[in-house]
Length: 462
Image (cartoon, rainbow, N blue to C red):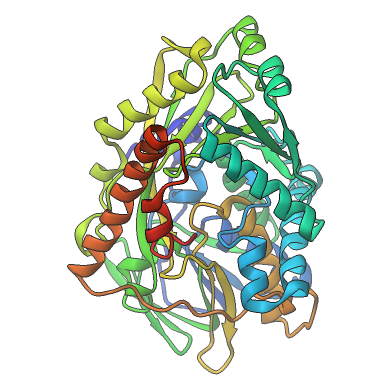
């Protein structure tokens, strides 16, 4: 296939990647120390840190397409400290110390990604400019205050709360009433990161077998298909790094739900337009609506802007045709122009999307079952660009038997319940989507926090 169609990020580096010509597939049975299913960021970071811990390890990454084909090469480019569960929710489940530890680990991860990219000479357009979250209605202002107060309570995230005068003097969001600013976030080019990291782990001795589909695994034995032939990989440990795509495998199935998130990119905008818009290089942005949107200013002065809104497909189906939706594309264009009127009329050059992984309790996890010879990480719910790095470091510690601060974090060993069987899963997931759209409409009319959102918050992980 033409991998440039994966989205703007892949298209923008296609010339440097020789059109993403796949690496050789697995041409014979193999015996390795670690077999990693999936050559996205979870798998690559795990390989990278395992190589640091023990350079002698024989590591094989098995990838159905090409490295970075999934969410790792399609996302919004936020290297952030976001985690699917808030500090207060972590506190309620695990206690204050565990919540603070998890938050600090996520904040530290932002700089760790930048450090590795710099050390390894991977140009990822890294610029740590923080995240601006606009509040454009009374309920959104209340949400902004709550975010600020939580930050103050736990003392890790250093969130700032800006009032109307400050926000309107800095940004071209003309109806903004307030905003929060979170410093722990960097703008990056995700495809440059995942493709560059793949080259680094190969240079260090790992093998990446592309065009190699994993069919199943059990007790360290992995069954694959490569170039039409069946192969067997025998491994000391199998690492499940499939994220949303794991829903297609019997070993994962209903443990993950593939939820599509879609994006658009504009043509490069003039510096004068960006001066009116106010978003600086390195800054990412969103607002406090219920139906999530996210954006950045790219290194070449485009908007890369995305959001939820694409429906869940019956049976957890994942197909190339689902990567685009004209309805969601139009919604994103309207939302971007509404948020930043100075961008109105900018030509849309790219439209893409793909599935991210959602566990039933919206709780990302990492773990290692030594008896089953299986490790896993995922369920990032769209917060995976940096969380994958933390997962890779944690898995490297777990697999090498190290007891560290990372292996004591509260997400280690967590097991989410399975999603409901169909058609209940289809009905519930899409009801949640409709509810969030309705909640935003409700708040715009009533000027009060949405009753719909509060009622259905358990379904959407809030």
